[in-house]
Image 1 (cartoon, rainbow, N blue to C red):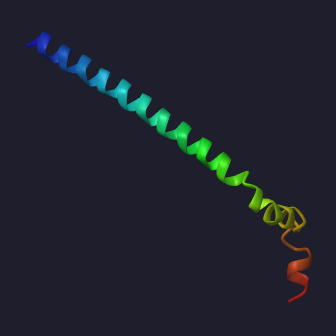
Image 2: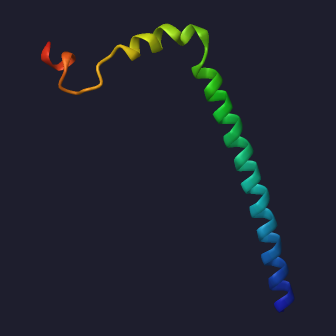
Length: 65
């Protein structure tokens, strides 16, 4: 009975290893896809415009209301 329980624990740990590796691969692929998505050339004007926007909440955009 004890050996069966230990084998079940070992099988569960092996499954956890595979799911962890699969999650790491999925995360890596998603991260790489987002880096390529953000660094597209047609997005450059948008990021240029965003870099000129004020960061403080009480600056230009609220005073013009």
